[in-house]
Amino acid sequence: MTFSTVIADIREERRTEGRQHWQVLLEHAGFAPGDRGTLEAVARSGARLSITVLAVVEEDGEIWLRVEKPLMAGTVVKAHVER
Image 1: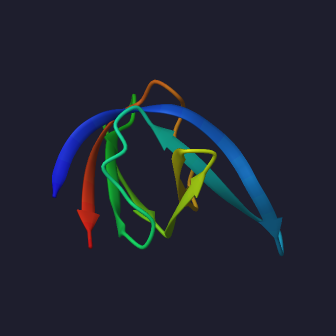
Image 2: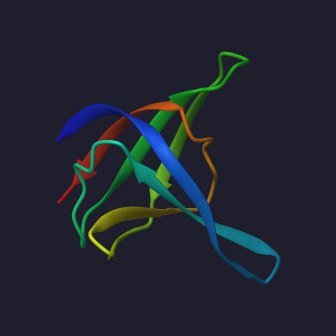
């Protein structure tokens, strides 16, 4: 499944061995726990970004995506869900 949406929120999940792990919240939650996938965005420079969704976590009724690279809130993304 593929859909377009916007990053609604971002937070740092943890730091491990100098690496940061992030969670992003989408305005449209087309992901469910157990899903994997990618988020595609275009940087201000015009470069295309592809961010792997490592895990999907449900917390207090919200679906957060675990990613290794942050995307700013308000960023338009194309989401590809693998079930």
